[in-house]
Length: 485
Image (cartoon, rainbow, N blue to C red; front, side):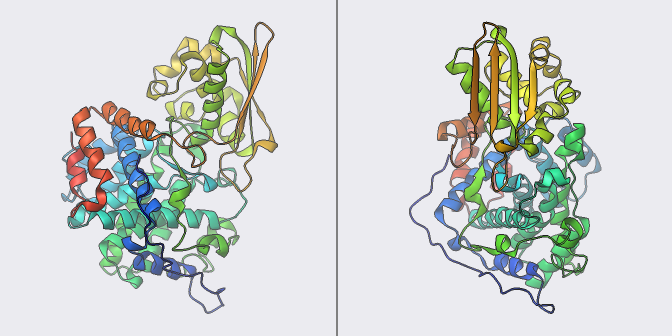
């Protein structure tokens, strides 16, 4: 894992605008100016280091997800449809139209549910920004590593600011939105427009085009549907396409956020916070709050995994010893990962498994780990794991919700057959800034993903080195060449 270099300039590029008057510009204008005016030299060193980690992590997750259900089909479909050779599908030397490549690469990056998370808004910022950024970099051919880092950092920051600003204090999943997809339409457009050198008017128009397509609901999470993996791809495709259409003269709406039928009105009942949108703009960046995943499942399940692995190891608990387990979560995690219990115990798809706390706790107990091998069609039929899942109950505990939003704590109560009981509560899952993965763990995750894709250790190490020194690359499109198997 990269660590911040020596002190880097912290420059405030855009200040919080005054409260909008009836005739004032839409807030999207200030965000567009921020995006276009910010340069690499304005980024703090910590943000540069984290952004490179995000690129490394996302590329690894995408390569590992190449042949996962949903990703495999969309990749094959895109290759069959072919088209102009502009940008590579990661892990191959096959080039397709740029927006199509962005869609495929983002879906691959999301397939394993191994991509990073911005916890305050329960969204995945890198999977909606980095595929778009690298794809446009590939298409243009002359984008430097520094420019790629800058566009990525801005896309992440803007996506998270928008998500924070909408309906503050309300859990988006409970409302029914899929934030990763919903804000991905804007994030990918900011990224593409920045790299393509759009003017202010062109970028705003592109954002209007993206807004006209914006969508993302959480029903796929509840149904265990493969479309859960596709939202980021649809958003990345739309952002690249919106920037290209605007560059050709297509006009989009201008009053995108605060208009009478703007984003805040249509999607959030006109409930939003300009403070959350603009506070620290240009001096604080969302990248510093991003969490990286040590386990390939929904981030909300990771406190349960951590609690289980720690408790079972510390107390030498084995599966045959266990009489029953109860998992306690706050309302958001309970709805997403624990309820209804019958569905979380009787899995019908791999996506179901990725969103089941009883499943991941059973894996942790029986196999003493949670990994790729637990999220396959064969795994969800294993008799030993299914038997253990039946001993696990779930309960809602509102006190475990995290103040300020994001995945809350998990409490695990375990009763053994000999009468002993154990309790473990974990508030901050491994991978959060407060509980980070070690550099060795972070690098090993990348190597595990690339190995899953069939990449040799030597090629993976070389690709890792390229990303770690990304700011020195005059042409960052060499990364996609280095990924090809």
